Length: 212
Image 1 (cartoon, rainbow, N blue to C red):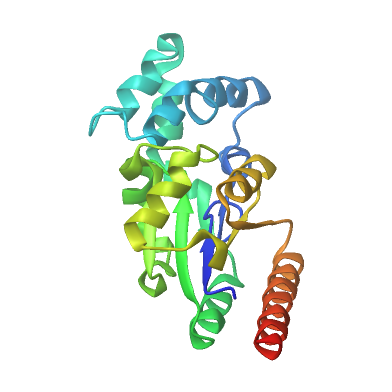
Image 2 (cartoon, rainbow, N blue to C red):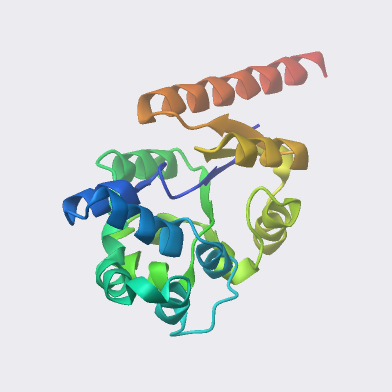
């Protein structure tokens, strides 16, 4: 029986789209390449996700990645929170699952400073039964320890749980750990897959009960 629904955040419950942000800022193609390399696609970003960047040091580390373009990097950093926004379907999806008495959780690779700057946008957080951001656990999906940390912290049985993520390697990591996985491609597709999985296990439970 499925009792727990575990969500990724970026590109599942909320947009994580730095390309759109850079386009809105009207940076040239070359400027975008510089910003991506120094910030969003840098090892520094992964270190922040892992919780290994000291408080207040993120901008300094971004700048150190390309001192020649310090002003450009500072400008992109100033409104970095604009890479995140809530999807229109999210709140109703979360509320529907709560009304059906599922436990719902978040497991997301997410840096502390980005969370501080975007938490007000993540309106679903108060509805969650538990939340693990990677900066807190110091583990990144698809590392097995990431899933283990969540399950241990909230006493979650992997076999009773399903995880939704937009990255195939993260879904596979959950499956290897024993959690059912759904690759998120769109809200409609993922919601349908979730309903099918829940229905399948409800039917299995009924069959098992009849055979006892």
